[in-house]
Image (cartoon, rainbow over all chains, first blue to last red; front, side, top):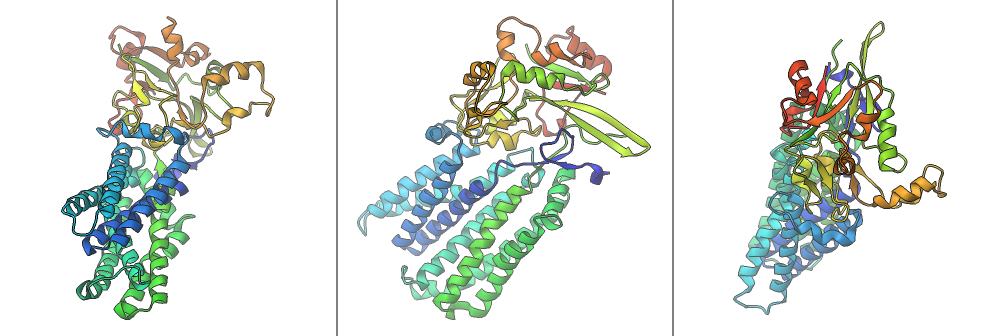
Amino acid sequence: MGRSIPLVEKEFVAGFRQQTEWAGLIASAFFFGKVGSGLFIMSVFLQSRLGMLIGLLIVLCGKGGAHMLYLGRPLRFWRAMSRPGSSWVSRGIWAMSLMLAAGFIAISLPPGSPLFMPLAIFAVICAFVVAVYDGFLLTSSPAIPIWNTALMPVMCMFYALLGGTTMVLFLKHLGFIQLSGKFTALLPSVEITLLVVNLLIVLLFLVGSINTGSAGRESFDLLVKGPYAVPFFALVIGVGLVFTLLMSFVAGPRAGAGTVALITVADLIGHYFIFFLLLKVGVFKPVLGFLKI
Amino acid sequence: MRLGMVIDLKRCVGCQACTVACKAENGTSPGIMYTKVLDQVSGTYPNVRKQFVPVLCNHCRNAPCERVCPTGATHKREDGIVLVDHDKCIGCRACYVACPYNNRIFLKRGKLKEGYYGKKMTPYERAKYPEHQDGIVEKCKFCSHRIDEGLTETSCVQTCPADARIFGNLDDPESKVSRLIRSRGGRQALCEDDTDPSVYYLD
């Protein structure tokens, strides 16, 4: 019966309705937020000030810029900080602002300052919120069932950690970051582990979304059978996870800068497109459900 | 007091008079409709059934749009009407994706520079467009401006030629809306989302 309800756009017909407002720029904001905060978290852990700075700049310019371009009234953006008690958008902006403030102050302190570590840890906590809040934002929307799953924040967190690890490896191979021997040996294994975990989470998400009601099923069909199936399987699964995993596994720590750059680009492509496609396949339920004869 | 609406699906003839009345009342730009009537068809010929489903903001008691709004632009009045403060809205559209009824409309930048006849606006459009802002989200206001002036019906209710829309106080057990909901078993759309909408449908 569910298949007889049409997927409609702006027609005056009752049916499943695709959301059209959150797409490219919001996906970019999510992407830059996760990559930047992931890089910041990993850089604090690896004690790389340059990595921290690049992470902060990605969040400030990438995420902040995408949000400002997206807002209908960007000059009123400060108003979005007024309701952290109930709105995940508000909480995200607070977390982002505090992360940037604490992060930049920590970096500007002289080496050996006793304030560095407390500020860096506070900024890491805020960066963690920046990485996962968009998952909670999507989950808190009851209207679109495929987003309404507890796996969404988990997926955001692991994608952020994967993006951060990939960026650290990339910056290390370019010579921007110096790591001690044990970290240099450890990072490729962390990357492979995160890739496997992310692949499992994406598969679990897909299996779970089959049973999220008729609108969730409609979203699932759009993603794996409909117009978004090719980019999903080619870019998200193929390039973003499987190719990256194989390359990381085969090339490993011996990989040259070119190979690492290729792995980084592939990973970031998969990272961007998973959230872009998940936004695109968001489907509203029909207002009055089924019509029986 | 909690204002609400009852929509009798058996009476609705799908004439879209409510859609037009709402547009005239609010002076919305082309493509912007706070309410409209959707067609719903089931079955295959010759066993077919068609019904018309008027949709509008449901002014939910537990409104997800109000909860997710980061600025407090979306707020609820004491009479249950959910409104958007145009001066506070930043156009983030969090409410758009949170509304299960998909009844929020984003006015793109520049949307108010053109009317129904292109860049040359009619006197009516020139008078009404200053009530709107582009770059923000709008929606049905249950004609709050009419209620504030002492009128008892929204524009769509007053216009409906089939008496398919009834407006009143849901908290008053003797009001027409409450009696209809009781006697005809009014149901709320997508009640599984726990929004407790103020719009009831009668089958």
